[in-house]
Length: 196
Image (cartoon, rainbow, N blue to C red; front, side):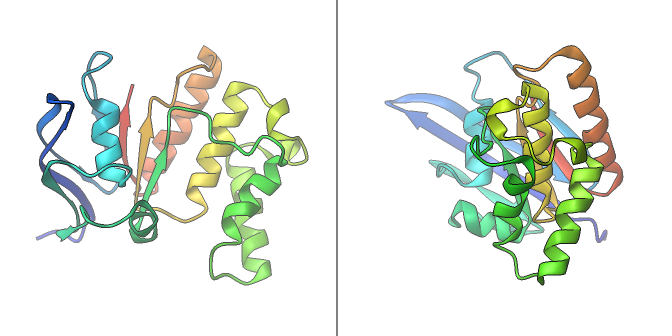
């Protein structure tokens, strides 16, 4: 038996207006592993992500973290258990600076002020955002916004992150940079579930 954390789904299913959009999806993502969910537009990738992260309830099936069922838990409860989610739509706070985007999340944690500051500065460094710390969200490029969103996602130290089309709307150089960040997260033992 392994001590590796595991995010699992069993037989997830979802229908909208009588049309089955996700049918019997079972998968497993281990800590330190990257798993891709591929398919054409309309294949149910985002719906599957929404069910795993808790944005929508499946009609059937179960989501587990380390064997514990999560299916009935709200999104914020899943986040506290170690599941982070980056939507394909931009989620940056446009009127806040890069640093304040990170602070907005870190201030929700039970950390001392110095621990909060250290966590923010560490992520600014890790994602090459220190030079941009005082820039407002609306002034960032698509790739810079994506880096801020990834850094903000890591504030809570998730075991698993779900990335829904993370390369949409960014230039090829930034795609390569974000791929490097994702690989680094894998090396840190974070399980990554990605669609593109």
